[in-house]
Image 1: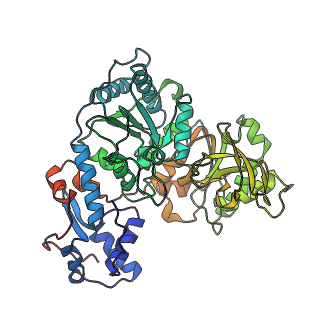
Image 2: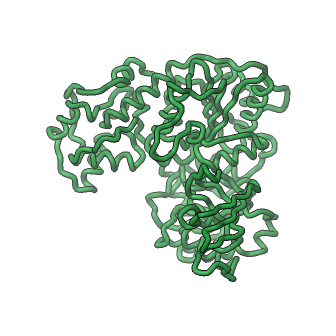
Image 3: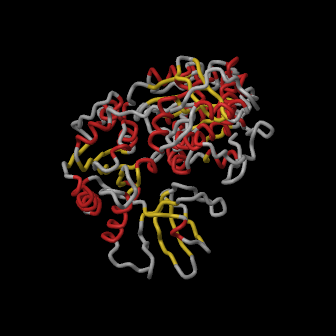
Length: 514
């Protein structure tokens, strides 16, 4: 795991921190040169050699991947994860496939994953991943098997629980007993007590969390199935282990293809498939576009969201049925969530009843921290019912109807407005109608994965406000991460060299990263 020791002051470590912040867990020569130039760092290969010699840094290579530099801690962690995955054996599930209307690829997935007892399940929107998982869970419960279901975020866990008819779904952090500033309560010495584990929204898991999770699972006794859509945004943290596992081709993998009957003809699904191919074409159903200049997008979105005609047209019955998505949060940008949220709150609730407080009863809210004492999690959505600023007493009802009575609680440090969310924050959730605001602010953020994630948050209707040329350009740009796990999966002998590595690597092949 990541070392808590002080980081040396040499510029190469600053370059690596920038690299990890970009989402890579390995720094290639090309990335290193770019960081060195942009950050105006000064170092050469000779000055880096002593950190490789003393074992703080290592060079990874092979499998046709560009040679790269990373910390020994990250390499060791990835090597151990690879050895666990490559060493996993079959743990067949009991029972046969249900005799109902499974699609051909769902039947094939059932046969493969139930036969292996572990593996990867992928598929785009409307292909029935959750439906298939629900059938597996039901079958295992009928045979008295211990089943745990988890997701990377509280929001994703809440959504999955609703789809599974109220089944218990926890965050990965809670399942591990992992709290900020601490190590997990569950690890290889105290593994999770379950026969099978189902992990949803697996594309959101970074390398560190994946390492914690697999360290807590005895793969000789417990089967684990990771489900997700690799076309979505990669994790906030570094690496992309779910994609690495898919690329390795050494892990059982079932991919769902057919659109389930209820979703046939859905324009959102058609658009999502076009985006995967680098195209953005407005379909004839389920998607509405309002052309708009960047400086007018924000106002148009606010009026659209607050208009009673919008709510009647699409039968908006609950606050969770309508959501605005934007790529940016900072208020300096047109169409940012900060600006839209403030404007919507004041337009919907002009009578501000809480003195000297930006929030008011009826506001759409999102928790921004995990609070195990009160029972809510970061990303959970709800409605503010009351707040006494003097007594720090709030009442919030979440989207599932659960009431939170919060005392000695400062709302501004625990929650924020949620009429509009950034696309990153919305990952793992969904809404009946999504309003996607499109501006040319922060163009570096606009990628195929970002737009795909935004589009697939909509269940029934997607409303796009802005210039389509921004989206047409964005879907041609993809995110390519360099992950340490890529170097080790399917290469057990190479992984063994690093799994218990403590010091010195040969200086052979040291490169000037920049």
